[in-house]
Amino acid sequence: MNVNWLVESEVFLEYEDELTDAIAQTGRIAKRTPDLGLQYRWQDFPDLYRRLFPENACVVFHGSIGLASELSRGAPWRPTTFCTWENYDCHVYYCRLADYLLNSDYVILPFGELKRRQQFLFDAVGDGARLFVRPNSVRKSFTGQPATSATFDQDIEIMGFYDVPPEALVLVSAAKEITHEWRFVAADKQIVAGTQYKVDGKLVASPDTTPESRLLAEQLAAQYFQPDPVWTIDICRTASGEHRLLEIGSFSCSDLYACDKRAVVEAVSAVASRRWSCGL
Image (cartoon, rainbow, N blue to C red; front, side):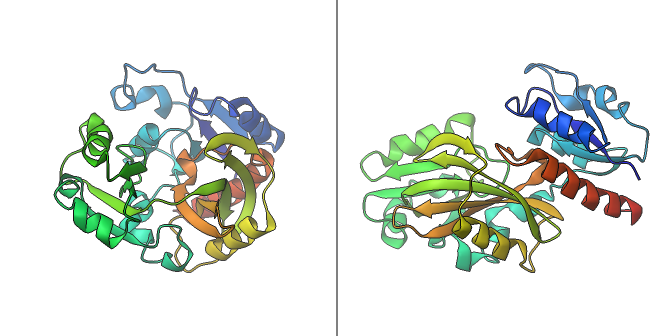
């Protein structure tokens, strides 16, 4: 079975050409979506992508959460996306991977309760000065960020800028200092590629990883809990030199940075082909 790839245009511009070249070099077909522009939504123009491949073709998608969500609701191909959304919500995987987590000291509560429960949160998980707050959902309504005791109300207002509903769950933990961040691609319980992507909070994409970060990623990839047959694992190193799990992510929508694109294409295509053959 020939595996096709659908790459959404204008999403991962840094490596879009590199990825499509790797797909072609392995003898597979890569097609890019037309660029809709920010003012349009994919659900308004389904024919623009549905006609790119024959019905029931074996297709792998890589692009935005928006189009991945649309495809998850009813793509005419298989397996298309690797994004079982609920498995990437913090409340689902934190309890399963707690021993590896950076933010293992956490509380989950509704966004609308943050201000009322400020003192409780600082007493429970804070260091007295700073907390870290992020959405529970993988479809992040805001970027995770610190909140200080001195500016707590203002910090929460900034987080809610995009109309976060009060009932939306958020995760609160102690703020921690991170020096390095790496991303690994896991397929069939194996690490198939890795990349550094941040140093001291700044984007520094490099194919270099450390033995410690890869070993931890391999341990996580081999766990009983598998959010999808293919997924991403983010590992960080703290200021004290400890390596911990930062978060997990959907392969379909995760930035691959400096990962070996050919290795990714080969491994993910093998998984997709097998799942297509099994009717999944």
